[in-house]
Image (tube, rainbow, N blue to C red; front, top):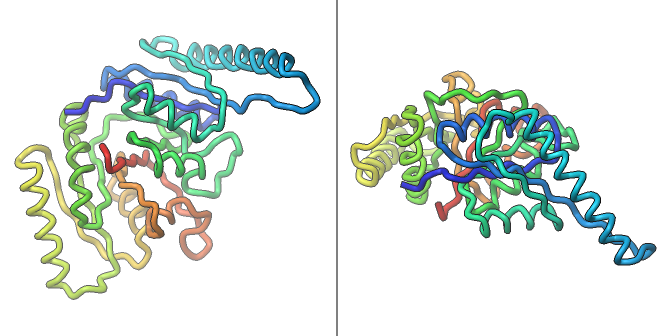
Length: 282
C-alpha cells in the first residue's frame, strides 16, 4: 500500500488556503502524515536597481513570508505535530510541481479559490492546473468546508480501464484510513440502448472485481444526465457524498466543465465537497 506520509499545503495566505490548511491538519492526524506549509513568490528584478539591492529585497521578503507562515502555523496548527515551513522563489506553478517531485510529496491539499477572490468558478484556475498536472493526488477543499471522517466517497468513472489504476490507489488508501463506502458513479446521456448500457456496467463491474478482489466496500451506480457535470454535482449533493474523486483529463470533456464560470444556462454549479484528483501514475 502507498501510504500518505507527507502532505503539501500551498498557501497564498487567503482564507481559502487557511481553510485547506485546517483540513490538512485533521487529515494528517488520521494518516499520521507530516505537513509542509509552502509559499512561493516571484523574485524581484528591476533594471533600475542593482543586483545586490534586488538580493536584499528578496531576502527581506523571504524573511517576512517565513514569519507569515509561522504565524499561520501558530494560529491554525498550534497543537499539530510535524509541520514544517518552506519558501520558494520562482514561477508559482513550476516551482510547486518541482518541489513535489524532489521532496517525495504524497498528497497536495489546497483551497478551491485563491487570493484573487474569484468565487464564480467552481474551482480556481490555479487549483485546476495543479489537479491536471501534478504527479501526486491533489485534494481541493471548498471554502468553509470542515474535515469529517468520510462515510461515502464517490469515484466518477467513464468505465475506462485506466480508471482501475486510480481506483486501486483509492481503495488501498480508503481501507487503511477511512473504511468508507466507495461509490463508482457513471453518468451518460443514454445515447446507447438499455441493453448496451447494462452490458457496459456489467463488464466494468467484472473488471473491478477481478482487479480488486473482495477488498473494499464498493457499489456501482449508473445514472442518466444531459449535462454530466451538473448531474454529477447534484447527485453527490443529494446522496451526501463526502469526497468526489476524479481522474484529471487534458482533453475537452466534463472534467474541464468543472472549471468553467458557467456550466449550463449561465449558472455556476460549485463544487460543494472536497474534490480529489488522482493522476495516472499513482
